[in-house]
Length: 423
Image 1 (cartoon, one colour):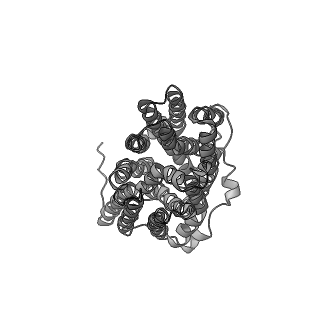
Image 2 (spheres, helix red, strand yellow; image 1 turned 90 degrees about the vertical axis):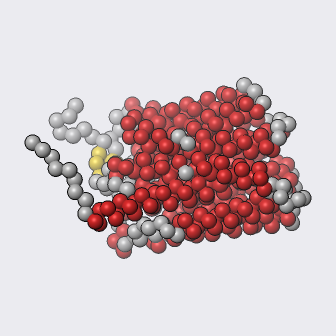
Image 3 (cartoon, helix red, strand yellow; image 1 turned 120 degrees about the horizontal axis):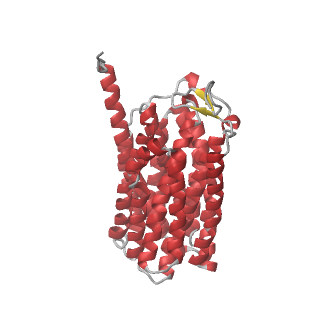
């Protein structure tokens, strides 16, 4: 018996080309727009320390950046749900341009609070950028969604090079205003990202989509969704908690700004480089296993940081932290995709990101004060408490036979109960 190969119509071929184009554009935009976050993390605490009225406020601009991420997620989701994702993407890019220009002005006029306002808009931009991963998953058939999600996140590898190199080669161009030229260039990169995003071709929501779907209160009780939120929160919380403090800690330890820039560059590369394989690992071994490895790597990062304060220890800590974040966060994002129907995607995804980024603000606010008051060692030790919570949630999900509702990639509701005839 022979099986005829599948046939493709002209419409099928056009749809496949559109899918590939969308994923490619989102990956390139991720590379360019991701430089925004890298620039803020590389320079935010340093500029904050220069401009702040009190050294304890040095990392406040980065905390405000995280607040911008948290505050923007639900409105961005509402815009995407009503007007389409591309509109939300372009508005976010506008926030990125505004962030760069305001930050340059803040440095010129030595205004700490204007710099905080700039990083808020930078956070708005970053929140929209992180929704690219879900947009990519919407572009492809269900069985390819983990790989599309990972492909876009892999664009962040180039952000890990673009951002730190942008800082290194521009920070002294506008003397005596350290980093002023850096933020002007960051605004220009945001404009380029907007041009690329303008070509993304995603379907706009229909009137039926706007009124369909289950209430969030029901979806939020799904144990799989709870696991995704807990692991996403803790992966991102600890990455932000340690990465925020690391550049300033390196400065306090007498290390150069260039070494901090390179450390952050390798950290961001480590955050995104595994994305080339993370989707395949999730498909083969499951999201829970990938998250578990991510949490173990974050723990290893803290252990390495406790062993010393030279360049090598900081760099290895940041690299392990980046890989751990990738596994933990992408694994959690893949679980989110299991928990919603197609018409619920925008509100569920934005609600998940709101919870992740909203909780992340706690770590960001605590990081600077803990570092300046108690030192780098205390920051590292405290990271183990949230890790324990995530491990317990993962163990509970793996070994407790809790019935659960889930939604397949095709949008069909299934249950965690065994089917008839199964053991």
